[in-house]
Length: 310
Image (tube, rainbow, N blue to C red; front, top):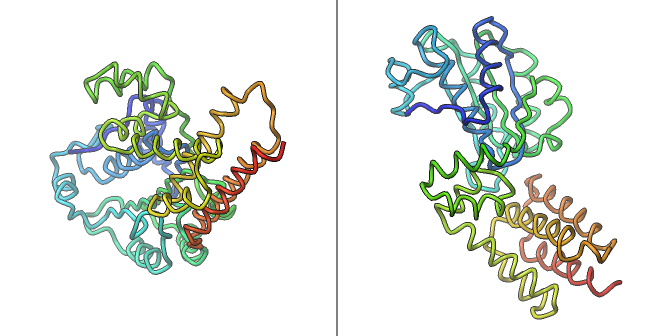
């Protein structure tokens, strides 16, 4: 089944189609924005639109030879590059193989498209390997970088891409889409705020146990804050979590505390801790593979100190 852009992406999609129709498509795009808003969906829809051999349509037709090859997972001119394991870096050998494929002639006589997601998962060596391809683009070749945190990409990479920044959709549009997909408007209205207004993240909460795991984590942080759980015990319970994702949960929890329960109790240490979470997220995203137990011990120790050093 062909990917189609999400309702809140209609303006961006229209602009991309105009570029295609006018022959002005860039050789590299950087699609950025928060996770859970459909960046990958847009990238996939665009890749399929370019690969499709039907003429004068604004979406992949799903019926031509190219679309049938794509549906079978056998189209030779489209590649998606992601970490080999969740939370791991994209390595230089992966990027070299991708770049090598992009220098070859299109096997189907049309576009060649590659998607790298998330682009910030590339380690330094992989980033350097990608630069040559960006500096010497091939005709009818598009590289799409999908990024949750574009600031973590090198300035050189960013400067060679045409940038598309996707905002969080407005609540009405997001809620209408989410309710239509899940079939339960009440559940959609309950979960969307917990997902920070990000509809695809909210859908994931509704279709998996992710929300329960997140709520368990926030309860853990709350127990440490109140002194009901030791920092060591809390850290031990976090070892098996995706560290990057859990740090994002922690950041959201801290922000919510600062703007609700603690809004009338200014605490400079709380904002310092929020900065520390950002730095920790950077360590994890860099691929340096910090020891999870030590990482969480340090974070929870600092978290506990937020409420003892007043």
